[in-house]
Length: 306
Image (cartoon, rainbow, N blue to C red; front, side, top):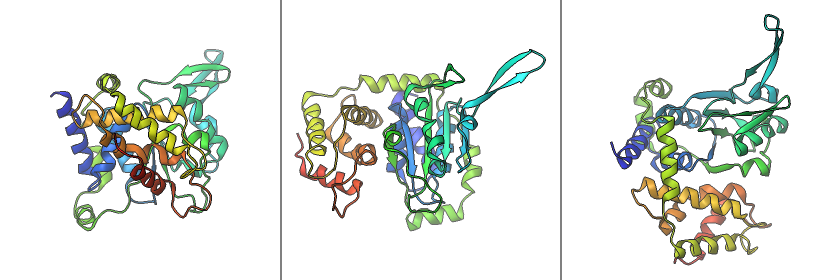
């Protein structure tokens, strides 16, 4: 199977579980190919956790799940050292964070202290435990699910942590035909357990290397800079995007191009992934009646294509 056939098979398998959400599953695959962490935000019961399970199994990665609750402590994620009488020394017992894919389920139900414990891991791919730095497995992804902020018992993620997520997607309710397929078909959790691994860690790392080789021409980079400048103009957002966010957009656009079977980035790649990649990093200007995602779309319509 060549690269394009593998990627097509990946997306097709995910869509056997998450029915009628082709664009969202493509975004998820692009996020992992770009080497980033993924935030899935939506109301309970629309398939957030199931999608995370399906991603891990399809990519053939070691998986760990943590249900975030208000009493979850940082040590519950990182692990602890316990004294071993036989060895007469403290032995470190790794927590669930030491996996290739960590599903942080309902991340915004945990306290800010526990949320912040993920920061070093997400950015540096390592953690400091009891004065010692420990490397995390490669590749390492956090797939977090989040309920809307207005739900009872949730804590808004700090801006510094939101910025660590490469993309934020929302699944939404299925259309009528897709919902009928869910009602008439097998239980989705049972179906996930039967999914074969279509990749392994080494193959994923090679695909990530291929993403880096996708060409971005000067006119495309000019267009990206025009979009970054537009976020900083004060017309749509209170504060603009950082250069790091711009590089994140380019990475995801390259992954989107690879999924489309091209070796170059097109403006349509940028437009397809921009709201999911930057809306969670931005706040609309005061008095705006539109949310961040709607503001990004309005900005996209206003900035001319190259």
